[in-house]
Image (cartoon, rainbow, N blue to C red; front, side, top):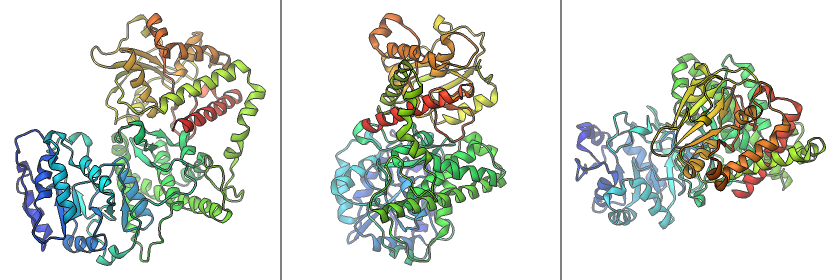
Length: 613
């Protein structure tokens, strides 16, 4: 598939395919609106007489050395599959499936039918290619995305979609002619590099669908490293949630949903931070992602790979994850030495996760039954101190003995409301002006480092702009600070010590869709304003907070009062260390009573989300 704007690059691509004969199919309307589908229709229909298989390449790829021999060896072993020679390093789900296969020492990564089929280089049996060409011809060119249609075709045929590990193609570095420039740099998840495997590498068997996981109550998920944050991506096609949305589930707060206890992860990662002079959230979040990847691989029923295993594929999978997953500011701040140190720590975290997952899976297998699926870790006291898991069953009872009933009910109301918002399908956040105020309780001010931290968390969401304001700035309720005029928009007021969770930003979309333009406060900001005092919030304030929040989310009350909304989601603390978030992130609120309330809150919220999912 060739666009004339690519110039003579296609000549080099044809040469790289030899001794296979590549034919060039040009865009039939190169001056028209960008549409990969327009050229794909022609390319998939142009099948050579007598061919058993048909390969379509896009003209901005670079084949690995010895490409033709690698390709024919791979096709010979997977003659019936839709064979992808490339996946993008930050695709929402496929890239994680490929990383799992690479860490497991596999030659093949089953991709399934959840995400678009990567079409930079795709092989189909010739008969299937003819049917695909007829299928694509039925759609108008302005549908644009051929990869979305190819996955529908493969799903309808029940055809396995498999990626080669490592990939036989790398993405070019030139500008996109299909209008995909906003996707940022695009590279292979596991590049073959200058040393592709021997052809015997492809003779290894492997599953055609992703193997089952032990102890994972929600199996359709991926671990994601994005904007220097580790999160979980839960696949929920029945909810109508677009796969490529940028709103993940914070790993430390929601790991129980996929059968992992964050206490075990935090214990292992604390040792990493002591072992290396690399500090801060970049290490913590990267290491958490690597640990969860290792744990996931160890408890997945992958076949044992025959020797020798290409250990380089595992390293390349981690390196590409780090390069694609760090926020731009964090990536630029790491010199080559620090980058290598970060990769080494990720390897260590991966090994820790592999050991923990192997132990957990082995104990469940030998016992026939396991721990609670929410805990998801070993109950062997010598291997894992499951204090967190054992405590969960007593939290409500313990909190009930010490917390006044009105406060306990208010906490439960807040948790249920947040759970309802989080379990909604993700929507694009509206244009939002974020007012960052000094925290009167702990003293954190919105200096440049605070604003940089906030921006780095949400670079994928260009709708947010941050503005520092002082305590003397007029209250937005008075109409001085309003959202931008036109379109869906909002203003969010938060404290400088708070970091809104990425998933929590979906609440802005749901609220602003009903009441534009909209002014919100985080729960922490709202609590500190209830009595306009400099003290830390008190549990006694919670019933009033819950009542105000419930009133605002009732549309009739909004129409009457035109009041300030309270964002019904949690914020994490400013230091971004791995740990469960609370409905009050301010460090000044850290006390035994607040921790008890947070225990009850997380328990109710998690139970509610599990039911809704």
